[in-house]
Image (cartoon, rainbow, N blue to C red; front, top):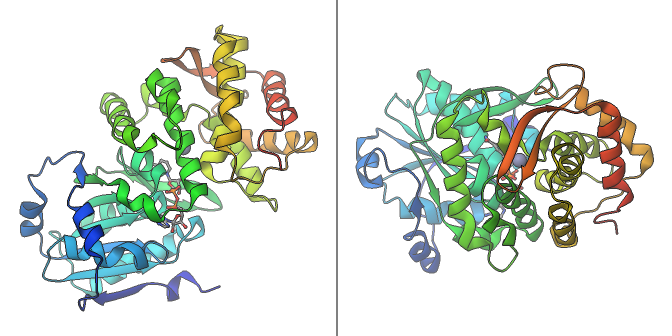
Length: 369
Ligand SMILES: NC(=O)c1ccc[n+]([C@@H]2O[C@H](COP(=O)([O-])OP(=O)(O)OC[C@H]3O[C@@H](n4cnc5c(N)ncnc54)[C@H](O)[C@@H]3O)[C@@H](O)[C@H]2O)c1
Ligand SMILES: [Zn+2]
């Protein structure tokens, strides 16, 4: 495998071909903010435009997006795909590329990709020369409904996720479901789990999201996230509800990464939400029907995942809860539900009960093949 240092390729665009059909579809891009006026005026105010993307997204979308921007020239930075490259080494390469091209404070970075790219690019941009503007163009479902929105940027460090980062808002987030045409189905399922999360915490309509109708609900999810973030930008309280399903989800995700069956983030969150709903029934009087209805959706959500968890995995998963940076004291803290749309946060749950929630998830064999 190549090192990140070899995988950054910055070059002036030389006029590659583009796909007209996609160009037309890109024209219907919807903008979340437009605070700084139209894209054209924003581009006219920038000294240089850089596009950051990864090796999977680039062949499909880089020429289209570069063409759609109508810029005289753009500098492209293509990095290796994957969470393992969301690190300081890659950020340094991005900074060096910006410097090599004499990017000044009026340069603009366009982050074209999934959450890995929007996190990494947002961090690189928000720190280069004390901050240059950046725009997120999410190309995964998860990034469209979550990662690209809300101003959290970051990289992994010291073996732990998202340890170094900034709060920095993108100038704009451009959402266009056309990018999902090339996204592998497993990634779509992973994004669907995050969409259902918004259903639980904020809008029961979103609990009807499925593989046929999800594109109609992307904007609504973004709207919910932006509303929550606007009320609590730095996660002092309310913003924590976005972590519904994530306390157990992160522990399961981290543990599975050490096995031969790693899970995607959304798949782990899908399982984490089973535990959170089970705990909500036990501790917050949530109607058990909410849990049962959700369980009926799991075969669909996890149809692409390979899950092989057994009772023996419970203790090691519990071990990861201790390292969760959001858990302050001895017992883990959860976001639970009193009802759909009525989340409560900072709920302390004792380890024995947490363990029983994991047993509930695992003995039900969701998604096992
Ligand atoms: N900042 C936040 O608020 C926030 C919130 C949630 C998640 N995140 C972060 O987001 C990251 C996960 O994001 P993700 O799930 O989007 O994963 P990702 O960015 O790693 O993308 C998943 C895979 O899909 C490929 N891909 C992306 N778009 C594609 C397309 N249109 N066609 C074909 N392939 C495509 C990528 O190359 C990659 O291999 C994690 O690092 C997580 O920490 C951040
Ligand atoms: Zn998530």
